[in-house]
Image (cartoon, rainbow, N blue to C red; front, top):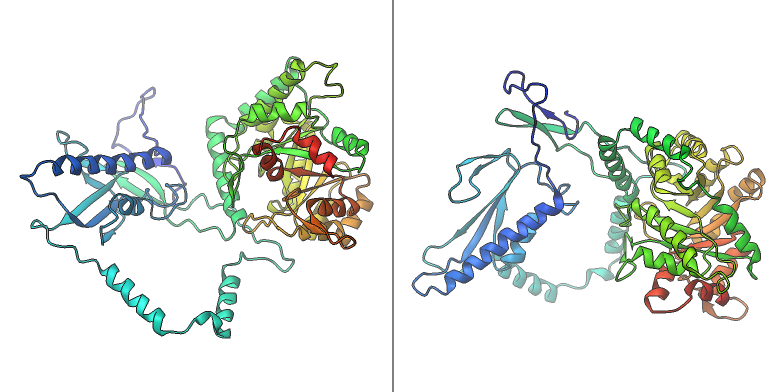
Length: 528
């Protein structure tokens, strides 16, 4: 197949000379959604105006035929299936029938005075109705009535053992495929999945044969690969390398700082030898936004004044709503906050180093984060092969970036143990489930890993390795066997007893800050 995004002009069909300017129409998903909504809003306004004309019978649609081109599928509309058909039901909720099919092009005109032409990327809506305005026959009403009668006559199937077994079977079917070690089987994105589409003399590719991801992590990786490909088109790797070299030689540019050192010292100075590292994150994949308004500069200033030893910034744009520019904003804001603070009143306040949290698959991303001002990076071990993990740690070392390895299983800990001593600066034990990116609300995943044999072996190989925990810390409640009390501090105490020196917190921190609590970080430290 053709490579995704490629364009082919048949030889001799178009006379292109050096210096000829070409115009490309970019298919933008967000604009297309707004365009669809604007189209139906305009139609509703037209119906409203016609309703004031008593001499004319208002048109009552009984069906709609939707004819989109092949490029306007679920992937184009942000992964949401049936976006255009659902928009029809949103604006015409009483319409009983919607049908249609994908086309290679749509023949029509945009305005009344336009010429009829072939549109290679468009959608056509044809509304059908009775000229005599007959009543609409809606089969959904009769189907719903029949279902209600059946429910009244039939017993509840949930009480039968066979139905329970069927539900369990379906759960096993939809589970992401795993190998014999329990690790997710991950495939890389297919870039030659395009089917050629020809309109007039121009041929381009339409992703038609692309496979569906079997897990959230796999889909995350595919989208991240697409994101990096687009960045490479704008700024090639060779140019990015040159920028990094000039950046490192410029004395006015900030140099990478030690991220692990301040965290380690803060944990040693704490009365309980446990430190909280705030993470600036816009949203969670399964629960949505963490704050009503995400003012990253204001949040950073509050955390710096609150004596944060270090900061973590989630700069992923796919699942967590972040941006690479967030790294730069946090670094610059934290430096300015220190200058504005009266040192006599805020003695001991330091500029916290910045950890960039993202799904890193390519060295290109490391160079981008270095230019953005990151001091350390997180590598998700579950998404990398041993070879990729080794390669990325070497590139990070050449850029003077500290590496924190995030693990969710013993197999991943064993993979980290194969690296040379000093390749990673800290280990993050995560409560996140990589198959659906939900969090283990019980917190057992992190506890089991901290007390596993793999962790003991890693501690013997990588001595003095800093171990942190992330995922629900500060929100997970745990039972104290001695007192019988259930609260979040019990879970944190067990983490500390199991070898963790700190935790990266996002949701619990955001909840407290949203409630208007002052000096949140200090209060969390004091309460524990």
